[in-house]
Image 1 (cartoon, one colour):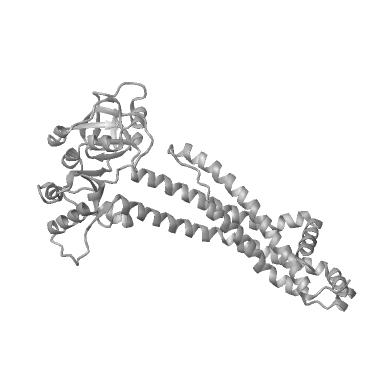
Image 2 (cartoon, rainbow, N blue to C red):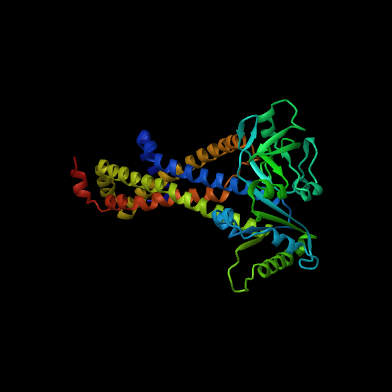
Length: 411
C-alpha cells in the first residue's frame, strides 16, 4: 500500500468517529495552546522590560549594593553603598569618563495628607536627572534643583495618579504633605506618562535624596546610583574604573567578592533576557505535561480503535496487506490526530495571546505588545506530531501483530 492510499484510509477512519476524534485531541489542543500562550506572553514581557531598561541610555551605568538583580532581597537591605562612596566617585580624575553620579534611595514610609495615609512608590533622588534622561515633563509646577538637594530642602514632586488620588481636580502646588512627621511642600506634578526604565512616575513621588537621608531614613546609604558617562564607547572603561574606586573605598582586594554590583545597560539587558528565558522555559515544561496526558489519551483511544477494527485488520491482511501496511496506517492515524490538535492549539493559543496582550496593556497601563512566537509555533507543531508518533507506536504494533485468521473470527 502506498503512502497516499494509507493517508486517505487513515483520514476516512478518523472521519468515521468525528466526535471521538475531536475529544481525543483535546489534550493536545490544550497543551499546544498553553505553550504558545506562555511563550508569547513571556516574550512580550521581555520586550517590555528591555524597552524600559534601554530607556536609561547606553552611556548609563547602574551601581547597586549587594548582588544587584540576581538577589534583590540582599540588594534592598544591603547598606554597602554609602554617601562617602559617591563622594569618591565624583573626585576629579578617579573616574575620568564620569559626567554625573546620581544616587537614589527607596522610601518605604507612607505619605499623609489631612490624617489620611497614601502609599505611593517614593524615591529620594535628583528629579532633574530623571526628567532629563527619561524625557519626563511636568504638568504643573517646577523641578527641584541641585541647590534644593544641597540645602536638604523639604520639597516633593507628585506623580499624576498620586496627585489625583489626594487632591482630585484641585491644585496641589504649594500645599504640603507629611512623611514621617516632616512636612514637604509640593513644587511639581509629573504629567501622565507611560512607565519607563522600571519607573511608573504616575504612582511615584520624589524628594531630594539628601532630604530623605536627613529627615526620613536617618542613614547614610543608597539603594541605587545612576552614573552617566561621556559616551557609550567609554562605558566599559568607566564601569571598570567605578569598580576599582569602590573596591579601594571598601578595602577589597581583587580576588575578594564585591559587596556591590556595577552593571552596564548591555549587561542588564543580557541578565534580564536570561532570567525571562529561564522562567519561560520552566513554565513551558510545566504546561507541556498536558501534552503527555493528551498523548496517553491518544494511545488509549487508538487501542480501543484497534479492538473495534479487528475484523477490518483481518480482512485487509487476508487480501494481502502486510504488517508494515497495518503499522503504517495506525501510525498515520495517530500522527494526523495530534497534528490536527497541534494546528488547532496554535490557532487558539495565538488568539488567546493576542487578546491577553490587549488586556494586559489596559490592566497594567503599559505599552505591552503582542509578540507572535514563530519559533514556538513550529516547535509546537513538531512536538504534537512527535507525540502522536510516540504514543501511537504501541497501538499500531498491537494491530500489526494480529493474526488474520483469529481477526476474521473475532466477534
